[in-house]
Amino acid sequence: MTNPTDFLLYADAVAKRYPDGDVRALNGVTLGVRPGEYVAITGPSGCGKSTLLNVLGALDVPDAGAVYFKGEPLATRRDLDTFRARQIGFVFQSFFLMPTLTARENVQVPMFEGPLTARAERVKKATDLLELVGMGHRASHRPKQLSVGERQRVALARALANDPPLLLADEPTGNLDSANAAKVLDLFAQLQKARGLALIVVTHSDEVAALADRVIRMRDGQIVSDCAPATTTARTVSG
Amino acid sequence: MTFVAFIFKNLTQRPIRTALTVLGLSVAVGSMVALMGIAKSFRAAQAASFEERGVDLVTLRGGDAIQLTSEVPEWVVHEVSTWPEVKAIDAALVDMTEMQIREPRNADDVPPSKPVIVQAWLPINFGFGDMDVLEGRKLEAKDEGKYYTMIGNEFAKSVNKKVGDTITILQKKFEVVGVFKTSNFTERGGVLTLLKDYQDLSGRKGVVTGFSLRVNKTTSDPDAEVEAVRQRIMALTNNKGDSLRLTPQRPEQYLDNASHLKITAAMAWMVSAIAMLIGVISMLNTMAMSVLERTQEIGILRAIGWPRRRVVQMVIGEALLLALVAAAFGSIGAVGATHLMSLFPQVNTLIEPGIAVSVLVTGTGFALLIGLLGGAYPAYRASRLLPTEALRHD
Ligand SMILES: Nc1ncnc2c1ncn2[C@@H]1O[C@H](COP(=O)(O)OP(=O)(O)O)[C@@H](O)[C@H]1O
Ligand SMILES: [Mg+2]
Image 1 (spheres, chains in turn blue, red):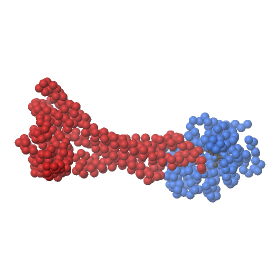
Image 2: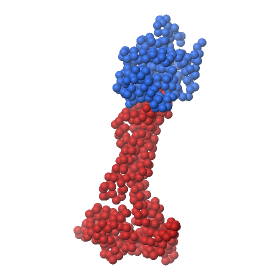
Image 3: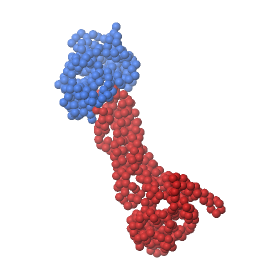
Image 4: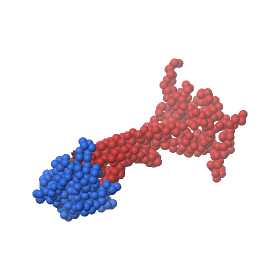
């Protein structure tokens, strides 16, 4: 018997239906992620991966079921904004950096909702994070002046701005060539090891999935398998 | 990066739109500030003129707010001038009439005319003592019946007349014997005749429109002395014992009630209200467009943890920043405009260059209100944007 308190994040039989087009995007998904665990989610386009990530990241609420963070149901939290700001780092396929801000300034955007109140502290933190992702030398550049690979590394630094224990990434290498994708994946692995960061990465790429501790395959809003990447005999999850 | 710096950078995203919005708002705030400033300096100039002449009381017929429409019996002036507590008096029949630009060519010819304010004065008026004679001489008691005139320097400039020329008022030729300058702009911009001549000409014998006076101050409580004179004027009756219903007022009080000043102030406020409305609409338009364009950006800010409150702060902050910059440019423009206007002889008697600080502060307040009102709805809309919508097409 699994218990939500054993996990950093736990989704219990979550379901999500979009009235627009009457789509059942999630149909009873149960999933637990432990601190420091690296989980990849794969599956055909439209199977509900992004919807699941949104529900796990408190960007959307499920119609049924519940999501627990450190054993506490998200549904009872009143300040989901602060929860997202401090507990979750988001990385998107299209980076979504602010065009008028430099890399260093972009990294500081989530810090307005974080613990650092002094401007100098925020600048220092942003500078350190850019160093960490290997972008220290490009700190004063705007997104337009950066390559797509560099942009994604800046976006990763931004996701770490408030030192969240969990990173959610939706197709983070989807817009990158393989060299840049490899760099970003390297960083993910480093962060997982060095900072004990838990990672949930939605991906189409087998290379990405291969690096994960666990690979979850979805189809039609359900999990069809959940196993280590190397294992050939998948543990089939009954619906 | 501070939050204010972040807001500032957002405005640089669309520099041309930001510049145009600031320009439009500057014009709105500038015209507001210029008009209110002019209305204020208009009043201040008149207050200064009363002050300079040491006027203690201005007397009009009860119920009248300005000289033009008032009527006071001339004998009152002569009587009051004999009171020991009255130091000096200045009575006038003020009239607004037309001046013929040239002579009629024949009996049927009506020459074009231009409005002119006529001051018809008693030779004893203290105003004669205050004026500077720039050319010719002053009018004297012995000139009565000769239809001589002195003209204000601004008037002289605008109609190009000098000593020895004639001007035609109420179809009567007046010979110019002097050009004068006083601290009062209506005097400077008009003509001066002797009371008797103008009463005869206009058929208003025995009538003035009002008088000012200086009170002899001998005690340590001058206010009480002025008040005593005021009470004494109010108590005046005609030979049947009926009250003359005169209203002597302190200059400040007179200016508060003066309808021409009220109209100027009302016009300034009305134009300000319109400018404000235009400002709010333009701000609303700019901010609504800007929020619409940034639907995705704002959704991402929400996704990475910004609460609705901070999104509202961001949008309102942008609107306030635009408004503040516009207030600065508008104020500079308005001050510049008054300096420019003071160079033109047509209006420079009415306008003092420069604008009172209190008006600039009011203008900035107006601008901030424009920012708040124009930014409120777009900010509300922005705060309702959903992060999931922003991510939908990622
Ligand atoms: N906001 C929405 N409104 C209506 N249908 C949606 C919405 N978002 C996603 N869907 C639908 O839900 C299903 C799951 O979508 P999504 O979670 O984005 O899948 P994936 O990320 O695996 O490609 C798809 O059929 C998609 O068209
Ligand atoms: Mg998706």
